[in-house]
Amino acid sequence: MLQSLLIANRGEIARRIIRTCRRLGIRTVAVYSDADAQAPFVREADQAVAIGPAPAAESYLVGAKILDAAKQTGAQAIHPGYGFLSENAAFAEAVTAAGLIWVGPPPSSIRAMGLKDAAKKLMADAGVPVTPGYMGDDQSDARLQAEAERIGFPVLIKAVAGGGGKGMRRVDAAQDFAAALASCRREATGAFGDDRVLLETYVTRPRHIEVQVFADSHGNVVHLYERDCSLQRRHQKVIEEAPAPGMSEEVREAVCQAAVRAAQAVNYEGAGTIEFIADAGEGLRADRIWFMEMNTRLQVEHPVTEAITGQDLVEWQLRVASGETLPLAQADIPRRGHSIEARLYAENPHTGFLPSIGRLDHFRLPTSVRIDSAVEEGGVVTPFYDPMIAKLIAYGPTREAAAAELAAACRAVEVYPVKTNAGFLARALADPDFLSGAVETNFIADRLDRLVPPAEPSTAVLQSAANEAVARSGVPTALTGFRLNADPQVRAQLTHEGHKHDIQLMPETRPHDLKVVVSGRDFIVFENGEPYALTLPKTEAGREEAGDGQIESTMPGLIVDVMVTEGQTVAKGAPLVVLEAMKMEHTLTAPFDGVVATVSVKKGDRVAEHVLLVKLEPQEEVA
Image (cartoon, rainbow, N blue to C red; front, side):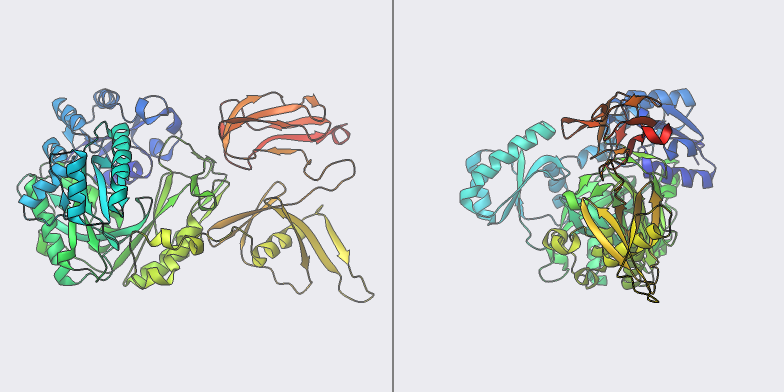
């Protein structure tokens, strides 16, 4: 077994690998960029080495820096995780050339699966079913147009060197083909430096089925069953599960054996995933499931496979890299129950899923399910890396039980002020179509209105915030409808995203059990994974409602200047902070004459929306 391991990655996968290494007694080395200096994985590793600035192109993607760190720390092997350099054949070769062990497949296997057209030809020769289409060398416009008409519309144009949904176009009619082809080629050239394309029949009711395979250096190849990753948004996976709903044993055997043949065809070693596209128009049928591509690494969704098999796939990787045989033969790999994983992203579904960045002032994840988290409370979500901040993984004896447990876990997520997709995930997991097994790649797009309803606080949220507000001293309330010997009516005014809510509280009103977090004059109520920030307006004489002295960021952005210091006296309208957001500068000014009580940011900080920047106190309060 390996004695020491450098992890050429970050976030939750680095922490995941560290956990297994700690259990096996393997010393771990982390590498980190400037943005990750305070990240949990850096602290949890036995040793950590700084490798450069925040942008990945200057740190995590620079192979020479990672090799230098391995040499500096005496690491014996390198685990690439997923993303970054995990499928870079040249880096894998450099690792082995440096006398280190590469925890991954041979570079020849990575290259064999790197180009979609070559990989499909190889798979067809190995007897693996491939999607009907055209993968020829003749790339002339005329030949591609003719082949598209032969295949039949709708047809899919895909960049040969593509990935991540780039260089892909659906074409529904012959007259639209030429323009789509030109657009696809331009995008492929910009993204991959290669304008070659292939054509496939477009599957109108697609499901994304993938099979976990493992191989060792002794010729053994096994599968660990399939996963369904059909719930996607813009070709990015959101919810994954194992096994695939609606998969018969006959179809499972056919697909999993095809995956084994695919791995054997490239002399594979280590963990890999064979991805298939299935036409779900008539359910899952063996003759309607085709090879799509192979990911020559560990997958983000590997925990659902671990849950149903009871195996640690990172341990399997380390044992194979150490030269051992696979821990289990095919007949000995169990499959029991059902597991579902949801990816918790720092993004705002109500703004088109734009990424959300900033400090995690409040960060609570449920303990009822497995959590693979990249961050912790007090950490910062930066704009430099993928916005996935955690994975929630549920396991149950049935699919229904796993879905219910995971939906409940997503509803229990509490994150603020960074926005997340927790509420969106909870609704997707509880959606009747999802529960019926109607999972297709267009599931989210077809149901977006009900999965992302308007972000309005419910009556329960308003009442919970008002209960908390009234319970605190100094809260602006009113007694209305006063009658002798009658209960007074208590009202509280709260504001949510600029909209005022006048909430009436009767004495018999029972407190709601929703979680309320108080932050200054804000009452953050968490309901079903969604945070609602309700604010107490100030109505004191001589001061505007919005001018309570708490100067907050109006949107996520970069602090480009701070013009005041604590203790400084300022006049109404004086510039305090300049925030750069959406490529524009916004100057935040003093709402009244006062004294700077607190400056919470400095030049160069990145902040989320509604983060306190400067606090002013009126001059009369400090006189």
